[in-house]
Length: 595
Image (cartoon, rainbow, N blue to C red; front, side, top):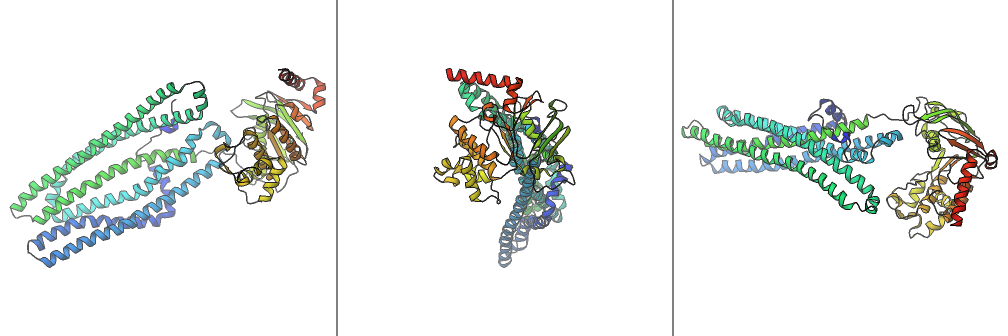
């Protein structure tokens, strides 16, 4: 399976526009940056000071047999090392702290943005990709903020201090030392280009690997049922092999580059010994300067290697930030009007006026739909799969916006209402119940401070869930694992009914709420439904026509249009679509009974 193009984004190794946006998140913590840069300047200077102190020790004290001076220089050397260690501690602490604060802010902003996105976005975007944005990609930026941006200054300052000390002692020996620099620059340029290509391959094959794993684990039951383990393992092996090869290529370039830097460093030292040694023999240069230059050369190449590592961090961060900002720039929102009406209470009157709705362009799934539901009235919607039943729920709750017409609640167009106000008056019980990791209680009240424990227990009793909950070891504090895997379908459905009731909605929607439960649980739920519907406006979507015979009104949908409206008896008497559906189900039931 080919990976999504979004996962292959590489972009530039450095993008000024992206960096400008990233630095916007650094702005609130600029005092950390100032402190870090200041500490960087000091810690970068302390390293090159030591070879200079060595030069003084050799030329001024060892040569003159000055033991007291030598002791003083030795103490200075030890002091500089201790001071450098202390400053390095604070530098690391401040940069890591800044990185964590920035990442916290960015992750909060990203999750908040994801919560605002309309369901239309999630219909088209794989779940794994969204999770990757808030985890892996954000973590890549953490390395940039904590070890990349600020620590680049450290490497640059070290190089600058080394050059200052070197040229202050001997400009000609400095030029000899730097004679290998053109070769080093070319090697670094070549390394960057090769690593960039290799990095692209690694990302590409990693995306393939993730996509394959996510899909196969999700469909594990099908894979095992049809005994496809060997074939899938073979395909996985091929993808894994490509990923391994891409990583090995990347390792190869590092394995070549770093020894190259070491060789160039050794050549520079050899040149220093050859040229500087000759100068010492001719007494135009001191031994101390020669020793210092050898140390400076070893120091000089270390930050260059570090800068190559920072390049890799930068490249990863640019790719991750491009994907993160692409998500943050996505404005697939259901937007409130600027002056949206605040509604504190509704009676529950619902009216659709000539509503047209399409998920994609002009492919309408609802066509000129009009109906009215009185406060407290129970209305059932029936029809074949794809008739548009669930779409009515989606647009009533403003998960999607309509293209034409009006939807009114208590005479107010729902587009004029704050969508949060609208949704707090509506509870939905779906066929596929979703439970969060937590407890039974937290899945009923969703951790709302407005719903007391007493109200949770009362809701569970009302819908008939209390009996099975009370038998659990921890009762309402029983741990619910991911997706409620330890509970039966019926138990999960009863919890969802308790959740709906605990929020005391004025409008209740039941979408195939009893289609996945056994007969005994269905009887329990039907009794719960009767209590739930009392005094509330309700919309019930059902395939089993036996469950909606007592509805005040039944609407029959066909190909996005309402074809019939009436009571159960009226629709049977009309002998239209509803009558045919009822006859088909009645025959199925008779056949089942006979069997």
